Structure formats: C-alpha cells, structure tokens
Amino acid sequence: MTTVALKDVTKVFRDGTLAVDSINLDVNDGEFMVLLGPSGCGKSTVLRMVAGLEDPTSGAVLLDGELANDLPPRDRKIAMVFQDFALYPHMTVNDNIAFPLRLAGVEPEPRGERVTDVASALGIGDVLGRRPSQLSGGQRQRVAMGRAIVRRPGLFLMDEPLSNLDSGLRAELRAEISGLTRELGVTTIYVTHDQAEALTMADRVAIMRKGVLQDVGTPTQVYGRPATLYVAAFLGSPRMNLLEASVYVHLDRYVTLTLGEQALYLPWDDIRSRAVAHYHGERIVVGMRAEALTPVAPDTQGDVLHGRIRYLEHHGHESLAFLDIGATAIVVDEMGARVEAPVDQRGLRRLGQVVQRLTGRAAEEEP
Ligand code: ATP
Image (cartoon, rainbow, N blue to C red; front, top):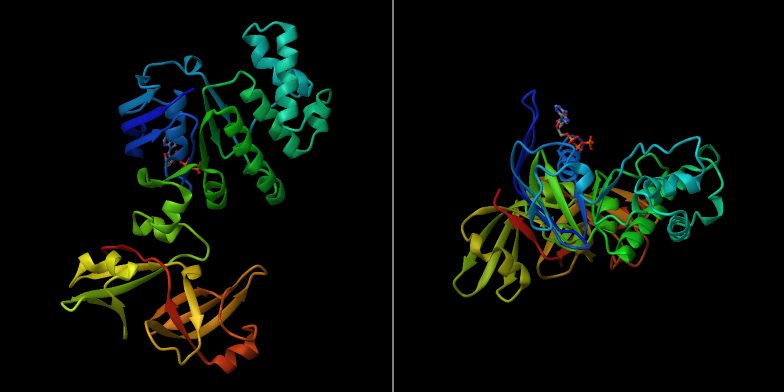
C-alpha cells in the first residue's frame, strides 16, 4: 500500500510555463483522491510528477514517506490509466490483461487465475477471447483498467479515464472504478475536470487553479465550506450565490447582515451569526447554496430576503427560480418550496414576489 506526499512541489517547464506552483498535498493509504480543476490548471502535471514522468523543478515527492524525486517510474509500483488508453489490437482481452504479468515473468497458471479474477471483478469475464475491435467503448476501458490493476499496484493514477465515453457509461464506470479501488484498497489519484465525477467518486477532492491548490477536503467540505471564493463559484450547479454584505454586531447580542437594500437580523445563537460575527464592521461575501434557501409566503415575518423572480428553469428533478434581490441576482432551488401550487408561469404571476428565508449555513470569506 502507498501514501503520497507532495512538499512545496513546483513545476516550471522549459519554455517558462509555471504549471504547478508550490503544491502541498498528502494522500493517505487507500484513499481515493481526486484532482479537480479547469483545463490547463496543472492536474496532469501533478500526476505525471507522482508517476515519475516529469521531474519537479523544486520540492519533494514522497512515496511511503521516502523521497522519490529520483526514483524511475518502473520502481514506483504505480499503474496508470489515461484518457486515450491503448490496447494491443492484435491480442485478445485475456492477453491484453495478462501482458504486464507476462512481462513480470509470472507463471501461466497464477497468471490465468489473476486475469480471471480481475476480469470478473470488472464484469468482462465473458469477453476474454475477443479482440479490442470487437468490444464496446466501456468494455475497452474496463480492459484497460484490468491491465492496470492486474499487477496489484500500490498506487493507481488515472488521468480523465472516462472522458471519451458517453454520459450513461461514464456514470456506470464511475461507480465501478471507485468501488473497485476501494475493494482492492489501492491508493488512487484521479484527475478530472468534471465536478460530478469528483464529488461522487472522491474520498477527498483537491481543487486546483492556475497551478495553485485552492482547497482540499471531503466532497461535503469543499461543497459546503469552500476555502476560497474561487472554489465557491467553481463547484456546484447551480453556482453558489455569492452576495456582498456588511456585518454589524450589536452589543445586545444580535447581528445585522446587510445585503444591498435589505437587512437580516440574526439572533446571537444562530449558526449564521457565529459564522460572520468576527467580521464586525467589514464588508464580506456571503455564500448561499440554492438548496439552503427556502421560498416562503410573501407576508412571512422574520429574517427573510425579498426578491422578484426573473425566470424559472425546470430540470425535471428540480426547478430553479432566478431572482433579483435589489441589485443582486440569486438562484433558489424550488424543491421544498412552501407554495401550494406548482411554480409555473401562472404561479409566478400569482406569487408576484416571493420572500426568501435564509436557512443554510453561510460560507464566507473576505472579499
Ligand atoms: P487538461 O485538463 O486540459 O489536461 P491539466 O489541468 O491537466 O489540463 P496540465 O496538462 O498539467 O493541465 O498543464 C498545465 C500547464 O502546463 C498548461 O498551461 C500547459 O499548457 C502547460 N504544459 C503542460 N505540459 C507542458 C510542456 N511539456 N511544456 C510546456 N508547457 C506545458
């Protein structure tokens, strides 16, 4: 089994491109770590440095606590799967999967057993006699996975392995890959720019932007308490509402949060007061997820925000209302809305104006 530690790892390519900027990251034994970020943010470069395919310009890559900067890739007990995995077209599925074992000099009998085990774990036991051209895209990707894990690597590195597949298959393989690596207990680093993939598969997600690590945490942590405004705006669909607000802590123990023209008066023991109280006298950005907001009837008293619906968007499993709250647009998840009628265009006219109650925890950061 393997742990990975990156200490102040920087990569500057020969042409001067700063691809990775002083990254510190620990991956625990058996953990499924996802590197997430937009195209060009340096994810693949991090992966390639862990694999030994690129040398860090500075900093240390540690595998199992040992400095590995000068360790050749073949001595790293690593298996990699890429987006454009290449199978040997003239070989059967069986021989493709068995290939790394043959290279390692494993005897035919244990070799056959291992191939059968891996193929049945991946659900491709019945196509072992076929050639790659006779397989579907998903089956080919499973063969590539099988070939990578058959030697029981300590560390599994995957770079966008599903990006060439259609969305139904991706969702299916997502669950299979994370299930399989967990079953095997193999430490995995998985690169993707697809946040649904990241949030569903990861034990922890590391989010990068322009070579810099922005946040590391469980999917719930990075989604609910993002460390930076960038992560807050990047993760989630619809995007998190980010509203500028001023904070005022009153001596008789309540907090005013002023958002544009409107103010919320929050009791002292309210979780939201505690989240913002130490920014007394400052302007901050408050983050609110759509699903943390509950539409209420227009005449509701209490800490509510008033907004006018600009438009509604129906997505089947949820409907979103986009509202103007003073100068700021905000999006609200309509599921759980306490309105009697479905909020269609008719309902919209009838409601005219909805009032929003803030029910969620605020993710805040200084602007
Ligand atoms: P993608 O999701 O598109 O694969 P990424 O996040 O994996 O992107 P990297 O491939 O790590 O990003 O690239 C990070 C930056 O380094 C990019 O600006 C890229 O153009 C640059 N880069 C990558 N490889 C080299 C190279 N060999 N020489 C110069 N620049 C490079």
